[in-house]
Length: 319
Image 1 (tube, rainbow, N blue to C red):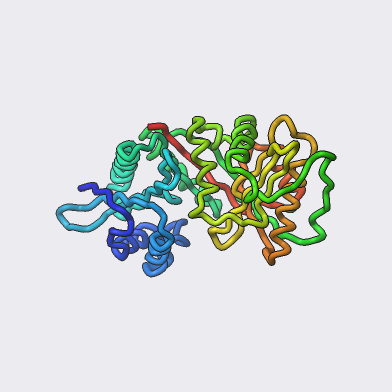
Image 2 (cartoon, rainbow, N blue to C red; image 1 turned 30 degrees about the vertical axis):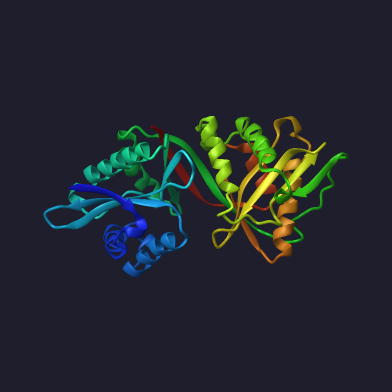
């Protein structure tokens, strides 16, 4: 096998779509490639959105065909991220060897591109995917990856009756996140997540945490201006919520409360106000992601009507 890295936009997407279909159509991942045209549409969507994505191909030199590939997003400064359930390998007789080589090549490419961390993500929407994950874990652990966290993807159907109006304590004010300096929100984010139960964020170093936050406020991404909010006290940001609308559904990207201002109900208040804003503009449901071991956050989200959809596992290695 010969391995080659190139921008996804320059790759033969039809060929990659065929590999996806061949590798997945008869497995528990078949929903990701029910047809070749559906697999091609997913790849075209990535390209059309202008995301910086590299594909690492494993090509059989004797046949001239691609036997496997791995998609690597280079969106967050310092961090490379695989797409869901990567690598994709259609040569079943050498699946494990090709998969491990693709992961090794991804690490090398990320390192040479100035990244010092690479993450792999797996959404488990069906029970059978849990057993499949063990195979992927063998591949990644053999290449030095560790488990960062497992999260719930949760969803709430927003209704007026489910939201209870909350009064802010005296001296606190609610403002649009767009009206607040980005550095002030980042300071609150760094404080809140440094003392949180979010294992994915805690597995990052300080620079990686800052880069992750900066990506959420990147002008090229879509932040919901009405639903992204801050709570201030003496002009200091003490709580915030950032809501993204890049995908079909609204997603609460980040929500945090300064540790010095917890147990005042600020998390529930800002979440309710954000959901009110979404409801009043016609949004009927919103998603959030939370570590399965973050008991305080889970308690709050369930109280606000969120229920688990499925789990997501994250692996990482520092380079």
